[in-house]
Length: 129
Image (cartoon, rainbow, N blue to C red):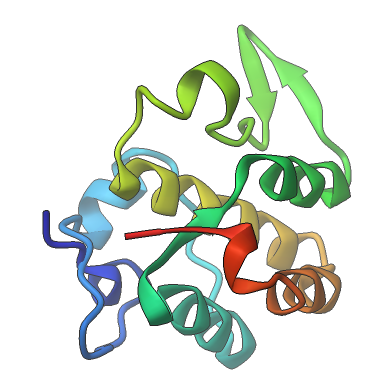
């Protein structure tokens, strides 16, 4: 499966593919937060076949996000795709959810903290293609 991440972040990254357009992402309610730091972090995640942190690390990242709240039958921001959702979701879905978490962090002003956490993960702490 080809993943076209450059279509998600609006940049061209050789070797990164995630087959969704901004129009589709906006339909899904994914926020567009423009900043060079955010774009660089999204590019970093795409490198070396990274998809998302391994389950325990992704949960740690989600716990770092401020102002989480229950909405209807879910959460804002949505939960990471771990536990039962891990085996029932594609790499594309996991990448999109991680991107949403990172954009949420940028919107809440904690992108520096999230970037430090993400860049501190070892290769073994990443789910990769």
